[in-house]
Amino acid sequence: MCIRDRAKTNFIGVETPPPVDYTITIGPNLGNSVTQAMTFSAAQKNGLLSMAISGNSTCPRTVGSSLTAYRYVRIINPGATARTVDIYTPSGQDAVIAYYAGATAPLNANRGACTGVTNDTCPSGSIASADACITGVSIPANSSIVAYVGYYSTANVSPTSLVVTTKN
Picture (tube, rainbow, N blue to C red):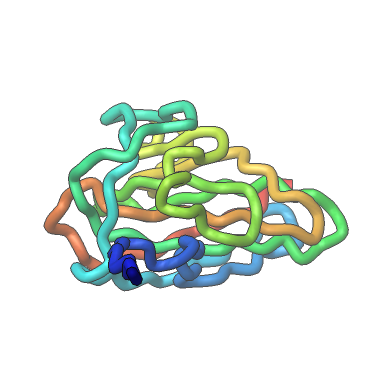
């Protein structure tokens, strides 16, 4: 007697990291700023990282169920010296920023495992023209990080920009 197994699964393979949408190479000198214009799509949404409404929230974070537009931006330090940078979005946008060590965006299951802090509202006195910011981010020599830039509102898909300023 022949028994045939017709089991079905939902397995579609090993998860691969999402693509990085933009790449910024930082300036080599103190005060160099690089601005990357970004567009967003209602088709590219993911759960919002949980955080305090104002100021910084320490990583890791949980990922909420509210789906918001986002982009990943690779920030490259091509130099032989570690650099410290400030990362921010301009005022007028209700954005959220987090970052991850390395050159690839995190797997969906690891999105909450950001590095350092997340930010929704730049702390008073940090960067006057910023909505969301993270200051004092270290990028090792000849290395990179990946920034997550998302919106707090589920309806917002307006274009914005990400500014990276070299601090040392």
